[in-house]
Image (tube, rainbow, N blue to C red; front, side, top):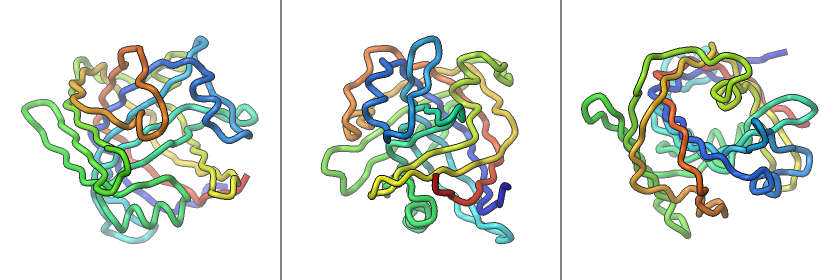
Length: 227
């Protein structure tokens, strides 16, 4: 049963994905999760967007702030999902709620989103990181919007409606979300700085990133559940 807890919009989304060896990801996952692959390759994704009007159920006005995450793709008992290595956000209250309510690895960061011409620029830096957690990229759509077809890499990377997170004591939790299918466009990006791999213990992938842009989706999130 889906019990809505939060609603929000994810707007002007950057999807940047790097293909990596499955063992690179698998060794960093909780034991109960398995890396999910597409044609033998695992993926690390940097996803940035503006979180708009995030609010609890029946609350008319919510918070708006940028968010940036590093994630990978997993499965458990045949259920595909997302596993987050970090989520950075520019809102202290939003970070506090996400840490307490959803046990997600959120960090407070100084972030900005601007629009130079037809592109978007997202900048982020954690003020208290032991190592520089910096990201700076300009991105844009390079083609028409379309809905990814089942069986394609685009569908594999985006159409996932469950996330997993591990508590400090090792217990695994999951949360479900709902939204319409993504509309994506092939995109381009100039990534000036990206230290998200380094701060999470990954070497920079050798592959070039696959870039997509989406205008966004309206999302509802359910209660976190323990596995």
